[in-house]
Image (tube, rainbow, N blue to C red; front, side):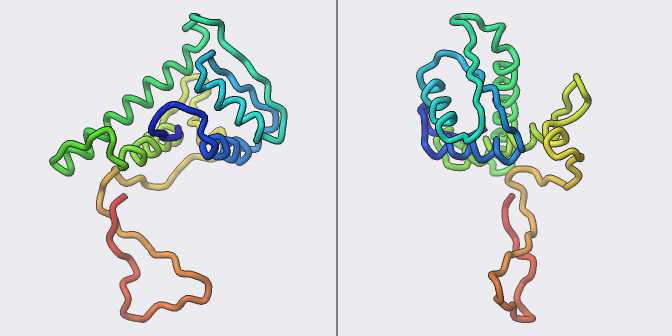
Length: 171
């Protein structure tokens, strides 16, 4: 999932999608979509930037059952986004408006947790397992949780002996 402020064929999103598809090692992809203008434009841009073969597949007009998996995925992701937003609001004891920039991070976190945690009934694997051929074994902090993190240093950059190695941050 890629958070955007409104529907449209964003150049940066198309390039990000192509980068993600390429990182999965796919060569030929099937780009399934409906006839919505914004989706058509985005599909054209992805096809333009993707260096391998793209097979377009359009669902028939008004035929919702042909997009059942996609519609179900959107519904599931929407539920995860609402759950993460609600949990964050409980943690912060305030309302987070839908226009707040943190919502973009919530969308990314919802997609990430879906990919590493949601087991498919068909083969018993997560999307991450299919992609990486191994289970995701790292601990995941709750969205908005206070954590300690290790700072990256630049090449040749030294740290004073009394500098904090693990500063506090928010996941």
